[in-house]
Image (cartoon, rainbow, N blue to C red; front, side, top):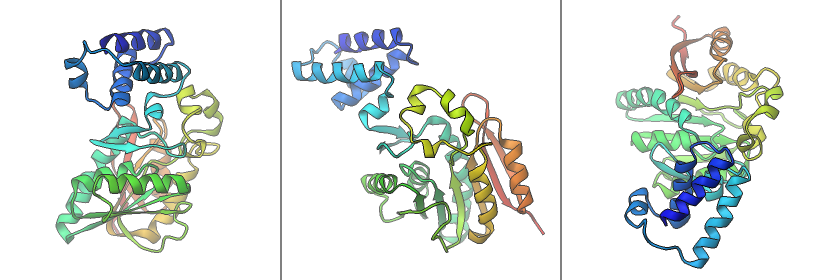
Length: 284
């Protein structure tokens, strides 16, 4: 087993993949459905012929540029293992910063009024909403996504983690068909400038759904919609928490300011870049 990890790591390094040894461990642990501890303890065990073939096939796919978590069809996010499909964005560690920023607001609202209703726009796998629900038992969430397959993935992920009674997902384009108001609105919307998409890494450009990336000419199309429509859907005392591109904070703050929303907080990601904004209605 250890030899398989070493061999995969060498191939990943030669192919220029990021964190080759760690990627090899994740891939082989995922294929064998074991944890890292078990991988270490059973390092001397040999793989049978069938497993060797599966590992070789998966390693070849990774060397060809397919992300390890896409090969496995799942990824861990905020302690939850989430199933992926071809129409869901792969949830990434930087988006956990959004959850960190949203949790205090959700917790405070739930404590104050006995519950908190969340709207997750562009829910994808359901990652953001489900992470919040797993930490705040009095919260409920509605996830909206334009993709039926993404809605199915989010619904299945909620059920898998025992959150199905507090999470519902529906197909829609942003606020279309949404008439309710919510205490907290969260979103990791498309924010890549259209002209920048061809320059993204192969792992992102070839394997993440383009409509989950394409933010229009200036990357701000989704933020314009959210800023414009929020007043119809945010309850009194509510909060909006959004992920942004690393160079978009000032532009997004200006957009929301025009619609009577003030920035409460700015957060940086794991690399020290601007990543998350929290908003509320301006005081009268």
